[in-house]
Image (cartoon, rainbow over all chains, first blue to last red; front, side, top):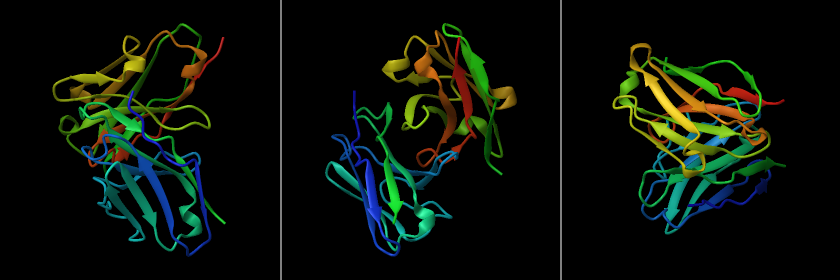
Amino acid sequence: SYELTQPPSVSVSPGQTARITCSGDALPKQFAYWYQQKPGQAPVVVMYTDSERPSGIPERFSGSSSGTTVTLTISGVQAEDEADYYCQSADSSGTYRVFGGGTKLTVL
Amino acid sequence: QVQLVQSGAEVKKPGASVKVSCKASGYTFTNYDINWVRQATGQGLEWMGWLNPNSGDTDYTQKFQGRVTMTRNTSISTAYMELSSLRSEDAAVYYCARGHRGMDVWGQGTTVTVSS
């Protein structure tokens, strides 16, 4: 089955830039989405179709894509950004969705 | 406002079935797919499948084929996910999520406990 690979953890100091990657063979063909999940809460989409930011999501969140890797970048990280982040995409057929394993962002 | 409201927590015995509901409001229910996603305690998100509320068409990930059934009642803007032959590994929080710009609206989650 198709898999998306994320680093388990990323740590940054406040004000620095955090980059979270997600790799998958079908990413050149399928859009990626990113979700932020804080403890005890449902996920919230922070990026759609690789690099589009939903309304209400701070401008410090951005997304990019290059080949089989997509990246969520958080510039000027704030303490409130500490959360789990999941990428999501589809297999090459576009039918089946899949989530990456998640990345825990720690703000030091 | 757009929201999805799910049914309450369930406790089931191994081998039983559970049916979770997801009531949509604030938008036209038949215009967007409904995804079902689960999350075991301390684990990541796992996509189970999706339902087209307009046609009733479904797609399930292979892991759950034969055990999961996703249905809807358009008259009350509600989607359902039924999982059968429950085992301990099925204990999780189950979410429904609207399929728009990814999954833009999520239900609050339904905790399913599987215990003898």
